[in-house]
Length: 275
Ligand SMILES: NC(=O)c1ccc[n+]([C@@H]2O[C@H](COP(=O)([O-])OP(=O)(O)OC[C@H]3O[C@@H](n4cnc5c(N)ncnc54)[C@H](O)[C@@H]3O)[C@@H](O)[C@H]2O)c1
Image 1 (cartoon, rainbow, N blue to C red):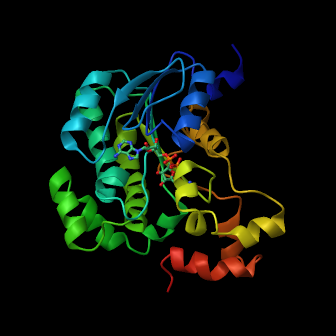
Image 2 (spheres, rainbow, N blue to C red):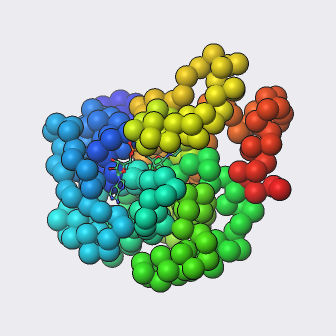
Image 3 (cartoon, helix red, strand yellow):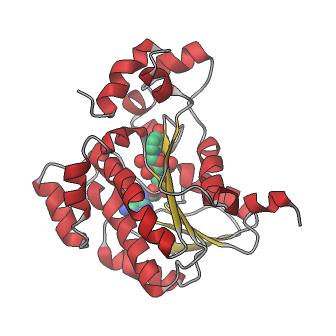
């Protein structure tokens, strides 16, 4: 035993939702290496060895409920990683409403219980959540899966930025209620990260901030570089951290806010809803 064990996952059962590729796959591998028993849910095939896999389609309510039942409990750590880009039908369900239903079902069944931690992958694309909090509250108040999906579609909010703002507002808003149940919730907001999803939308996703990275002499983030902070946030070492969305973008947003890299300022103001 050492003080550093608080960073590890020995004796914990970790569920990675969206762990077939990209950041989720890195999270699953890292959690396994940190000592956890790992369950991976995804709609795609999972290649990682030494983990249990469960099929899940987050756009489908029945699939979520079946996956939750198959997983059972306890789930000491839930990593909500799956996400899709604009143009994917059901994006509002896959990126947010489905994750929320899975969490709600696991809270109701007791699979997520006192001592558990939830870590979600949001995006810097959701930075504007505070500027849009009034409408986000209206949206988050619709707790039913189908009603929320309908609201997003009817209000032109079935898109990537809104889904990520919804996660950020959800994390901030649920933190207190969950803490009273002994559960923490946090999220990371990655900048451009080299994954299959980003490669499929390379011009927009990996082109973003390329000027900043060139001047700083760095590459786009690796999936593992995002997995490390997410694992930390859900570890006992982060027991004092709750309700926070950590911007894991190598400093692009901060440099835009402070104008230490002025070329980022306009983009950051736009993402923050400050136009
Ligand atoms: N790559 C980036 O630059 C970047 C930046 C910011 C945020 N993000 C976010 O990071 C998260 C992980 O994305 P990634 O870049 O690793 O991409 P990825 O495509 O490699 O990973 C996403 C995973 O989600 C799964 N998935 C997709 N739709 C699903 C569904 N309907 N049901 C169940 N699983 C489903 C995919 O099969 C895949 O395993 C996403 O939430 C994404 O929005 C990515």
